[in-house]
Amino acid sequence: MAPNFLDPSDNKALVSRLFRLMPDAQRRWGTMTAGQMLVHCADQLRVSRGEKPVASLRVPGLLKPLLKWYFVTRLTQFKPGMKTLYELDAQSGMTPPVSFATDHATLLRLLAPAGYRPGGIDHPLFGHLSAQEFGEITWKHLDHHLRQFGV
Image 1 (cartoon, helix red, strand yellow):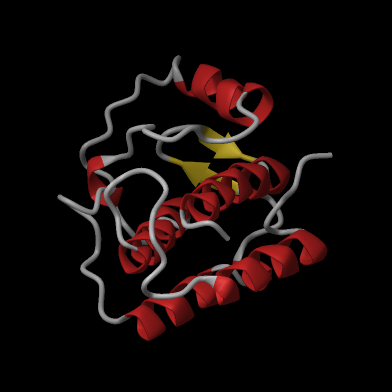
Image 2 (cartoon, rainbow, N blue to C red):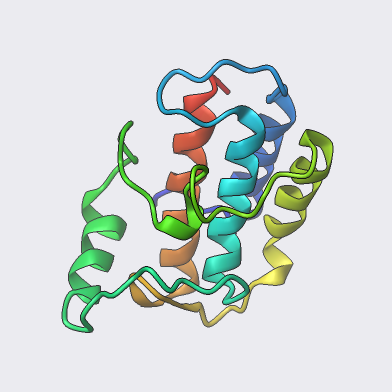
């Protein structure tokens, strides 16, 4: 079974990696700083929770199952250079960073599995995701950015 941020042991491993992230960590690819990455990941969770609207996304309903299938079953890890949504981009629509410590604490709060419904979520890009699917995609996303900063 693939790693899943909603699984207690997988969540603990992600949180442990997040605690090793330092504000001055150098990126291995991309343009974000470590602090911007924290906000970017928090915004991804806000979008998934329905707390941050996504106006830039226009995915026809018939494409959502295909995107979901690809991201859940075919994509083993996000690749450097993958594009993100306007609302998650550090140069455009991302929530402005506050401070490394504050943004770190916010991401940790959003990573608490208790904040998510067992029945899954309705995602603007993928349509309905079961809790398992959502947990796996989110783990892949967080792992991608933690690898970006060497943790």
